[in-house]
Image (cartoon, rainbow, N blue to C red; front, side, top):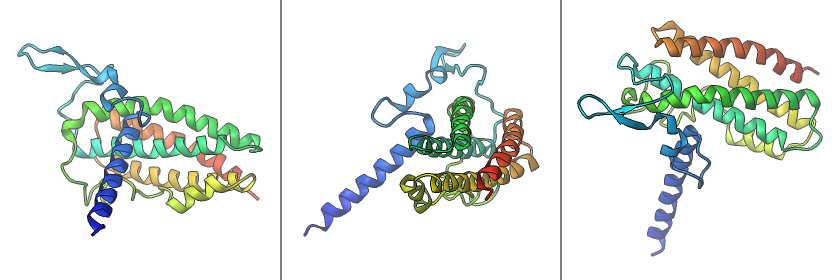
Length: 225
């Protein structure tokens, strides 16, 4: 007789997890503000000639040349960067972390926040290009509805291992996760650049490649015996 209550609780948990993921993509700390308030510069604030709303997104206006692949790239990169920032902050909260690992984690947080500003603006203004269902092929094929299955995304056990670890094991675990995420991002960027991406996406993807080349050298140093 208690099964309906259990099902209801599980359903509520699933909905809460989905909402949390959406808020993370939009950059909203859960429980603090709404998704619309997360990116105020992208909210429709004026009327066009025909009375239609015109969105303002700090030089990133709605563009009908944006494709589903462009939108998918933006959404996937947001998930990569949000997770990377989250894990870097996890490392920085620990005591006794080596100076080089601390410096790297701080640089990741700063770089991710800067990159996410553009990505989140595109995420909102390019929403009309969002595919109705999770792609099964193309650059984002097999990523799942929440991109949790993207190549290089850490498993729950890997994340928990970092949370529980102390120096020097924590630095090694962090570097391993960063290495795998870098590989996943590079693979995504390669697929995007093989196509005909939007100019903003091409510039973003090329910048990701440059950044990952630099990060890879740092990660290799952290993993060196």
